[in-house]
Picture (cartoon, rainbow, N blue to C red):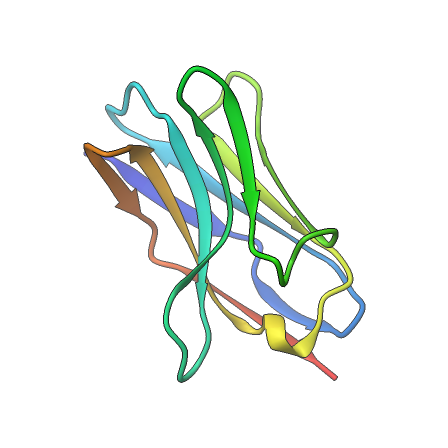
Length: 118
């Protein structure tokens, strides 16, 4: 079975950094989409950052995190990382990994809590 496990969340002060990691295991092939979403209390889930490939590799970031967050994929591994710098209290949310092949299907991790204190 396909399994996505997020790690790296925690409590950090404003201005600090965290690195989230999503490890993908199981029978999973032809991945063309790897992304991080987040959902804050009272808010809808939003796309934070994504890597997509459809002839070329594209990187996408939410405007609110551009210049502060970086998404990357480890070479030779089905692992996607989100490096978060200059964290702000408004970054507080549950962060979810989403991996798969679009438009066919994607899989979700269970989420990891990120809390940024002021």
